[in-house]
Structures are given as structure tokens and as C-alpha cells.
Length: 189
Image 1 (cartoon, rainbow, N blue to C red):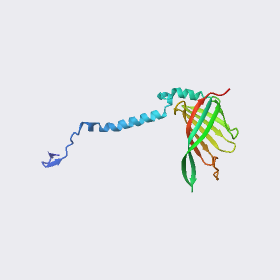
Image 2: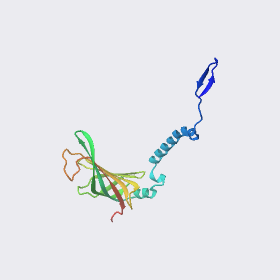
Image 3: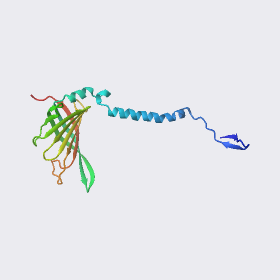
Image 4: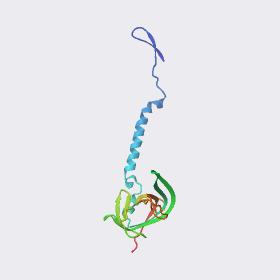
């Protein structure tokens, strides 16, 4: 605070801005730093793995895969309890094997106890999507990521979109999402 004389001769008390500690001068820069960090995070999240130096070799191996052997150990099961969506997470133990994968033609085969189903394959930027459509209506999608998940393993997600009014133990009757890993194996023959 300081005394100041006005144009009409009155003396008034006036607040004078003081220069604060040295770091206060940079307070406005925090906003720009935050914007830069968010921009960097968005850039990294939208770049394919090989451009970030992560998994370039895994990316090429996944793009060339002809056979995958997958195991899934965590299951999230969705349901509607009294019309309210809910999910239950439990341990799981399922396997899914795909062979004769041909990314150029967009096809693959699957080992299944339930017979053949149409399989469509798409590879893009470190993600291999394998989509199975059944004549009975359900849709299964397995996505393998060019991200390491242990020795020789890649991260994988398997979803089953299916619904039945009656829950039958051991069969898919509600939407399911499994988390696990896949290994790239040699095609027999």
C-alpha cells in the first residue's frame, strides 16, 4: 500500500503491485507447459508403435503372422440386472488358435469344436483384428496388439457378443470380454 495524491489534491491510499518471488514470473507459463504435455500425449497415443520406437519388430512379426495360439485368463461378463447394465470380472481359462492367417486376402481359419465360421482378418498399425461371425448370430472378435506381454507373448483381447435369456453354465449367454496373450507360432505343414 502507498499514499498517492490525486488530481484534485486529495491524498488516497492506493494499492501498488509488488513484484513477487522470482518463480511467480513464470506462473503464466504453466498453462503453456500443460498444453504442450497434453499435445505430446495425444501425439504419442495416435502414432503407430513403430514410429515411437516401441515394438517395430513386434509390429512386423504380427503383420507376417500365419498362426496364433492364444490363452485368456480374465473374463468380464456383461448383463442387465433389472435393466441396469452391470459387469462381473472373474478368472477364466480359454484358448483360441488361428491358422492360415492371410492378411492380404483378409482370411483365417480357427480351431473350433463348434464347426467352421466365417473369419475376416484386418491388420492396421500394430493391431491384428480377427472377426468371426456365426450363422447363429453371435460375433466374436479377437484383437492382438503388437505390444509385448512377457516372453514371446503379445497382449490380446477376445470379445463374444452373444445374448440368451437363459444362462447356461459353460456356454456364452451374455456379452463377454477376455484379456490374455497370444504367441506367434509356425503353421504346421
